[in-house]
Length: 436
Ligand SMILES: O=C(O)[C@H]1O[C@H](OP(=O)(O)OP(=O)(O)OC[C@H]2O[C@@H](n3ccc(=O)[nH]c3=O)[C@H](O)[C@@H]2O)[C@H](O)[C@@H](O)[C@@H]1O
Image 1 (tube, rainbow, N blue to C red):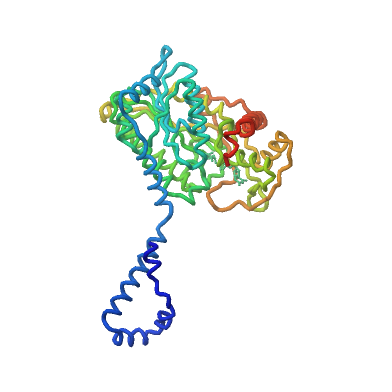
Image 2: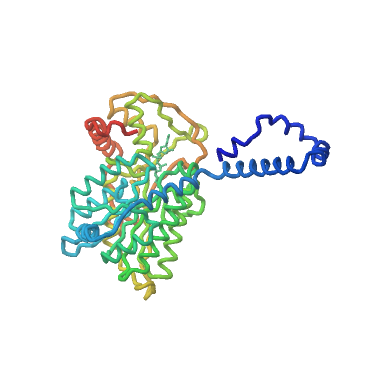
């Protein structure tokens, strides 16, 4: 590209006069053939340059992430032993669970909880840099101390997934690997398609072919309710008006789950998480970066709806979500297929996992101010049209009945635990101070 750029003549003024069709006509006949060929090549080159430059940057980002995943190494007797040891069940009636996205926020908590109660747990994570990978490495170190091995690899790597199922007959898959974040979908759409659609299909393909087939629980999102304004959101409400590409990929995931259940007899449970927060959380989420910016004295952009309308979220504490995930795994029926063939109807479920108590974002900031003993520099902004919805509110009756799901942590209590963790993680440990 640089070469083409460098090839632009230093006297581009010559081209300016070409605006007149008459001049073009005259030049075509007057210039020697060689000159004409030269200018034609240059013109074509410029078109090519323009085309290359206008290619969405997201595509180059996809290939970046592919390159990263290709760089991952796996295999060999030592590696297989670690995989087997980590997946070994240590309690009666325990399960052997492959947790994708194990170095992520929800993945790390679910993996730890499963391990604590004696289930076999193997993590899988590609450690991408959507947010600071150092935080993911810290979560990994914690999990490793409790005996959970995280395989470094991508859910789009079918060979790796097949290998994992060759080494271990997983009874369950907890699929939490995804490209998260509502607003980032406008910057990097390809990443959402790559992880939330292609990655999901890649995982289902391997699960469907496995013998025995595992039962699958996976993370959908409250964002599938999109522009639905019937509150509280019930699983029966319409979900065909997503407000972001992120939501659309999660909704697509729900439909893809239906087909794999229908054709191959895979037992699949989708969980619609409602704005999960807590210790070891995601730095891209508002409660996390508000905390960071209040501490730094930086402005806090707070979105408001039309006519200064309140923007609110059904913030749900991580420990409650973990209980919902474990309840889903525990009540998941077996898949009915084997070797890629369906033998009978299989379970297909969707649950809301929320807190049933929406809180305005302004209130979230007030709680943080009290906990941090600092005044936030609030900047009220009209909610940008970048995928956000004005409010979320879960009806959790179904999860209550079927999973025994009962959230117990209010936002004040949950944020207190988050702030305590945040201060100890970033302030007390010098090695983490650089985290942005
Ligand atoms: O419930 C979900 O399914 C989704 O929850 C969150 O999405 P969101 O609720 O938008 O969470 P945040 O990005 O933390 O935003 C929380 C609230 O703060 C507001 N906000 C965000 C950013 C900002 O600069 N200012 C601001 O007021 C948002 O409008 C929203 O009401 C997660 O980021 C998604 O990955 C997840 O799927």
